[in-house]
Image (tube, rainbow, N blue to C red; front, top):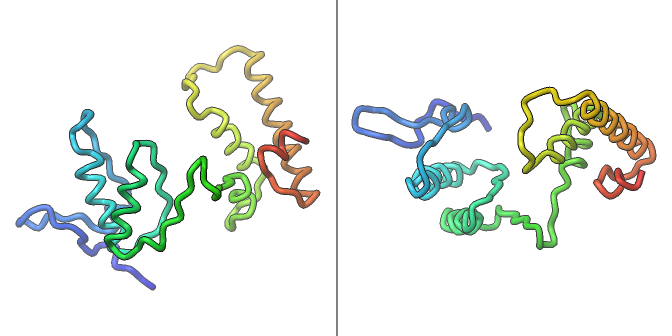
Length: 169
């Protein structure tokens, strides 16, 4: 099904300024201080547009109550059955390593999977912009080599590329 990406989905004023589907997918930056309405106003507008136009995707929520807002909005738009709510305590899980191993268009590339592992390992860590010392680089490179070898071994053995399996290797 083709979609007119230049179709206006929201009009801002009587002068004809509008938001298009193309705008939604080329990047929107919303800035403001705490309590300025980024989530409750602009975010809520985009949420309703995405749901009304039957867009799909993954919504990653950090802010308390944001997942509930998405579920409630989806229900109001008749899309409550489309929601797959994954939580740390729920019965559903998403293994990004297996997803990367199985996806089409370049999935399964060991270097991409090692890069994903490195990204996951650094979540919540301070960003270091200098090269650091030689020992730090040696251990980082060695870790990535070990991860790549473990992933290659698991793939060859037909096993899942999960963190417990990588750690086990």
